[in-house]
Image 1: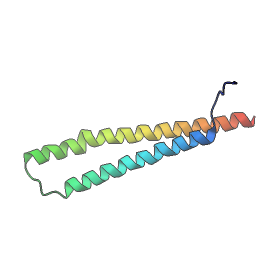
Image 2: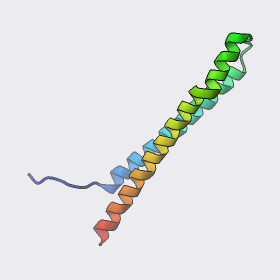
Image 3: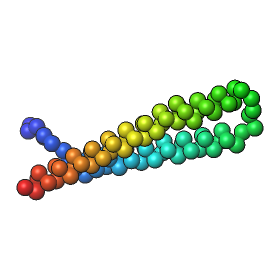
Image 4: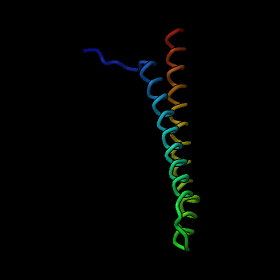
Length: 89
């Protein structure tokens, strides 16, 4: 059996689209949580600390993951295009 080396660009394009979709999902989740937190009647120092943590490090972690997902998707898309270009040559 011959070994298949390379990629099927359409599969890699689908992978890139999945990265973008999931990045958007995480952005929506972050916004929903922020909205829910903002709508609570919870008051006091525990709430203040929780909100500071959420708006600070927790949200920043999500933003970093979103950025990484988008970067991965862009790289996958670029690789798919490079495969098409190489196959066309």
